[in-house]
Image (tube, helix red, strand yellow):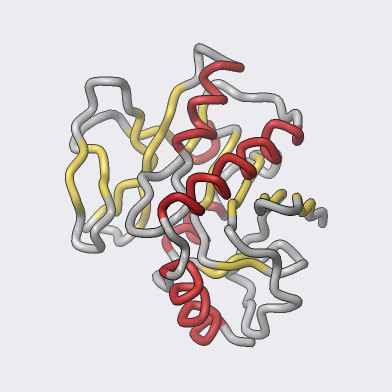
Length: 189
């Protein structure tokens, strides 16, 4: 199946999840993340969830428990370059909604991609090879190509993997892990 069709199907599937079921599924995915037993680095990039998207707040709270020194970064779309920037935040950071309906930090300093140890990557779906289907703008793949080779990229999905995304190309960057309520997938080169 191609990304365009996958986006349509998974947007509909996600929209059908009730809030109470979503909370239970997110709890199960937190347990899956805890079982990964990853080293929790000092610099973690996450995102502000929108609509019916997986909310990584439980994951980042757990990361803070495991590493109180951790610094959270959130993506901001740089309007001049049309690329993502990773912005450091703290408890006082204000967020503004961008043109896509996504909350972004209103201020904070930019952190270079090569300084990030763990990335929580948004997605609509993924395949058994570790490729993801995002929202179609390519922001994350452009950003991920500039990250360290040893940075851990984790996705979370309410649904298990598709067999194959047919139109993967050389710009697509694979995840290291993807966690669903029922399974944890590991991807290696």
